[in-house]
Image (cartoon, rainbow, N blue to C red; front, side, top):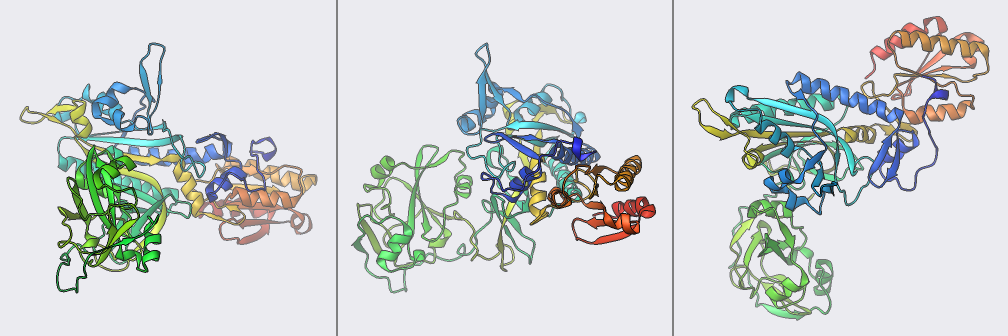
Length: 574
């Protein structure tokens, strides 16, 4: 392809709206352009990369025995109502509209309902199972905060797959097949990734893994232990520190409880500063509504409540913080001054972190008042203890007790064991060997196609631009004649372009009549693995220069050896 005829609009400036490295470089290198918040057009170079990703995904899914289908993006809301997700997600991520007949249609953010409905009408016997169906399609979500370019958007391309099995043993097998398939996909794309235990979220099910690409611009935090290999998302990571301690009620010089003035002071940091204590000597009392039922959760002052863990513990999907009116009604005091002492008619849970505490500070359930020297057992009691907080950098690995680290990462894939959540709701049943009707056991497996491209760039760049590998690069070699008006240079550039294309090499010929410095800058920005420079050395000595973008290594050789030298380097590209 000739650059002069290509649509590759590059620019030097860093876009004001771009924060993530991948967003900046994709805009500057002419891979994408923003249409409106959360939606992007993929320009020819960007689409070439996406096509390569899709090809790898398709090859590996087919290799695993999955079968490709294509389902409608527009879905009837009735199917979503049957699974209970319409009420849960309407007003959150669902984008809907009413057609001319007044029927409400959902733009699919995912396709569990649709594929289950499809299979429910076609599969009748255990003899037709197992099945793994997948598609590569555009999805839609009413994203509240589109950001980081194509990392978080309202419209995106996803590969979603769904497995259907007779029993849990079959699901385990399908899950392992997809797990291994995802590993091959990300390895072929050249990504550094970590598979972590994860929370299933809105999808449901009990077992889930996320595939995370460590990246500075990642939106997620993961916990990783280098000693034993434990890895989990921050929502899922266990905090075992105080689990086995006994609540402290005696023999610790328990001091008398006392009410103190804290005028207008509500935050942990400000209360600790005012009372001249450490934040870990405070206990936060957090009032929530668990599907409408009031619940109080106690957490040590320097820890954060993990709503995901709490929701799983309570076995609820709808868990929200109580509003100011509800708090005043339950505690008798305003928001910011809640405490467990004297709290009545409400379920009280406590994080394990309270087990080792004594003589601590809580709210007094009165305006501008706190209690000091509060003690569990003597001054109040809790119904149950649990792991309700987020893992911190001070915590040890829950498996081996060694050091564990927190990393920033970008989610690129997510797999779930769904079980019968959707098959029961949509009556996707089959007859087993004994002729008994049973619901199919399902799994779900998603990959963010766009995110693979963003994650790769986040992991492969330098101050000059992108650094592509052989698997994803839009072109394998950039042929760069420095002086396009020199007949000999122009001739050798065009001849090599034709010869290499004939040998199956994808080439970009920079035939623009621009200053060589501009062409070199664009070459580094675009990040094509090989750059062949045809310049003064060719005119003076008959030599060409081949440069590797990733390492910066350069090789000079006579023009007559160019084709074979280039083919050899392409063959050995990483």
